[in-house]
Image 1 (cartoon, rainbow, N blue to C red):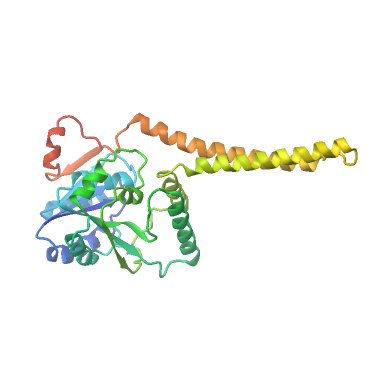
Image 2: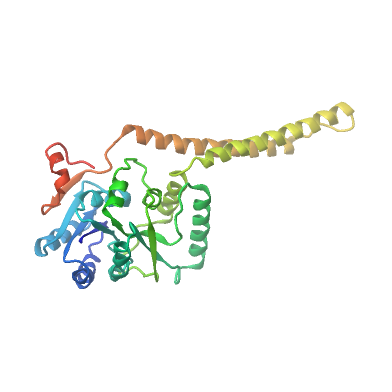
Length: 322
């Protein structure tokens, strides 16, 4: 078994020494043939200097540095494209993904599974965040064409054919949790207790989490568009019924035409629904716009040592793009 460990990094200068010690205590007991691929996603601190130093003193540690911050999805993709192993693990650099869990995950992969996902519990999380997360995953699994387990993140181990399947998906708007589920193959899950971040601050602000959640909802279905049709039809039926009621009242002479309050309420409700529908349509249109441009997912600024996989050597002289 040749194991590749892909680790995206963004401003992880303080956590890399702890990560290095943790991997040094775990990986030798798992696989003799291995590599660690550190993907610097345009960090603004000394993360790149740390990964250079790490790769210079330890055999099998390689790195790739992106030209700017392209986001975690692109960093994961860059690591997968450079991974040479027949078993590939993906984990975060902040040690919230315990490396010792690989002892439980890899045997499951060897028993016939193509994916083994680490699923964290929510013990220790704030109650509000836990409730919102659970509701989101219920909504996601109801709307999307894939099934994403609550608590399942990017920490997983994959077979080579599962990774090749993911790499064959060329879309720009990438929601990795959904992509890993969409490709199928036999999947097992390993539960672990939620681990707090060792140092530094999370890169996920509330706004980024909301945007990431919207990506998940829209990446694998068009049901919001269909829902807009249903809501529009429902509003049209109500409007027609109300217009009929007003007309009949006026013809009978026993009722005056409703005034200002009714008019303002109707315009406000229908106007708000129209803006909502336009927003949903605009979101899908924007995704189409990004897809048809076919821009690379990332650009590589620097890599080493000997990171380029054999199957990509023929591309080396053409371009260093994602």
